[in-house]
Length: 121
Image (cartoon, rainbow, N blue to C red; front, side, top):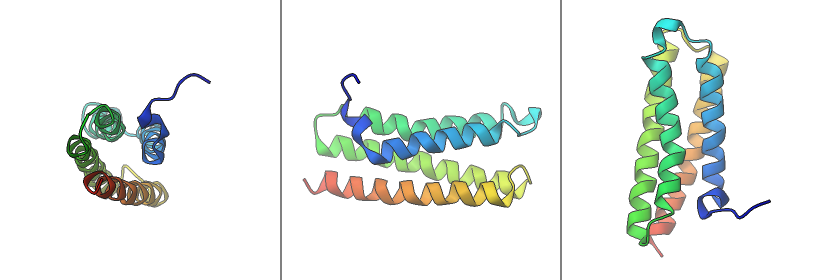
């Protein structure tokens, strides 16, 4: 295997990639009229979680890294908001909704721990 960049070694980044895959698979079944609505918003927000983690690792200071971890958390909350809406609009079934919520909870806990470590080092 080739060289791994620092963000690729973060468990929370690996988890966020899994969330992206879940979101992409679930939104495939959303109606066509949601293609430029919730489908697009959910996909973009989920990608933003991982992308902000990657960008943060390129920063030189822990404060800058923590800023991008905060942005990642904000994107994660955007995903949560959107899946709540999708569920209430009956675009998501209860099983998928609960699966995504569990992933979000796991990732949010790891993001909070990462930010705390970045600010305390």
